[in-house]
Image 1 (cartoon, each protein chain N blue to C red):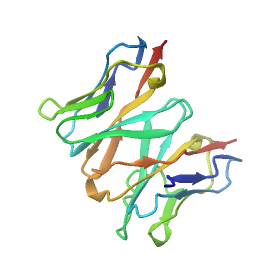
Image 2 (image 1 turned 180 degrees about the vertical axis):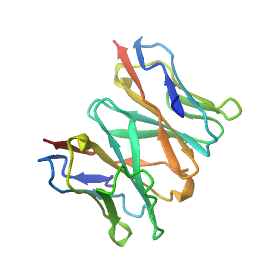
Image 3 (image 1 turned 45 degrees about the horizontal axis):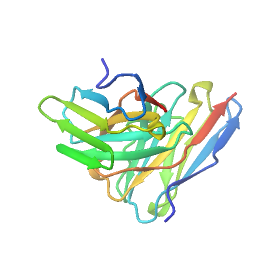
Image 4 (image 1 turned 90 degrees about the horizontal axis):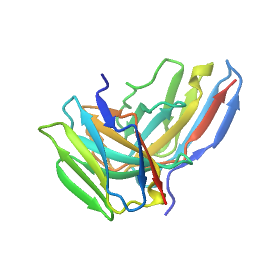
Length: 117
Length: 107
């Protein structure tokens, strides 16, 4: 079956512009995660959605970052007034359950490479 | 000190060698994940474990909860195993990643 998909695969934007990154999780997966990986850095947790529960936003680096998940499926990560330090690969993952303790196998999308000029 | 530390950072091996990558963590965890990231950037979840040992093909993952330590072993390594291997720990509602181990297996 189809895996996690993300779009666009690459995004180049100018500093100060807003960007939207999309994630389509695996059908039926209730948990969805956003991460980012800056150049030469490790993975960093951003936000976690589980079913209809309020998302865990504890990893968002600033209030310029927000995410929503419509209908328990597709998710959009929005970065407002982008800065150069936002340049990174943004990865989405989904899992069948998730729960509060991330104890289910996660399936990763290919990522969106964001470059802020 | 990072909450999740991996060693070594870089590892070069010859095809056929037995490989071990280590992960130590400093917080109580409910689960530990081993991930594989290929040069193209795609990430694959290899294992999720909370105790004992798991095996999949040539890959073996072990965890010692008392010692707060996990190892990923690759038997009969192959050039296609070349990738970055990442350890990630679930603690409460947080998922913390190690810096990754770059593995290169030469033919």
